[in-house]
Image (spheres, rainbow, N blue to C red):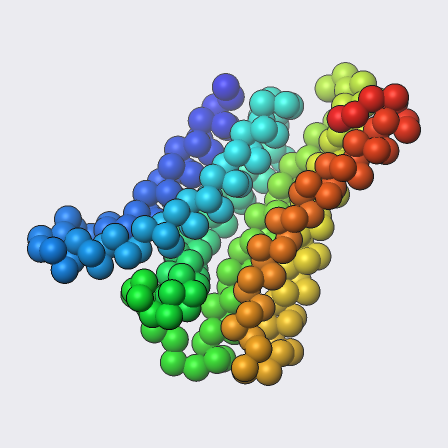
Length: 221
């Protein structure tokens, strides 16, 4: 484990703590307990996103072990965005589960207009775009150092595949944010769920990459 990975782990752990369902105080009565527990689905959803990027950085660090200046700066950028991103993430998860449950799950955050909703989704989308772009940048940096890292052709191919994997949600998220501002009010509430569709690209990308690796190297990734 590198010192850079240790730093990232601590930062992600702190971001996860900010998502906790009752960060201010322990519930003092039954009603407060139920209200706090109603935030559990939003907490789990936010944790899933944080865990997704933490694991992605861990995989990158385990594969390459880089601690040079570009790696430090990109990791610092990743951590910084996560710290800024955590509250819009929590708010969006709360409002999303409140919408899906018909208001039974408390949102804890009020939106007064569709304009405010569009701004919230745009902030969330911008954070997601930056996080994915930084991960693509980390893999691109490793790919540039493929000769000094002694990568075999297969390893260089896998690294290039990871760059594509992270660039696709960048483009997809830009499309979603554009739709948020282009769709009429009665349809705009469905646009955030398109972020879930972007997650389907991971398995599709793996299948395409496996076929390409089989044709090129005679094996799967």
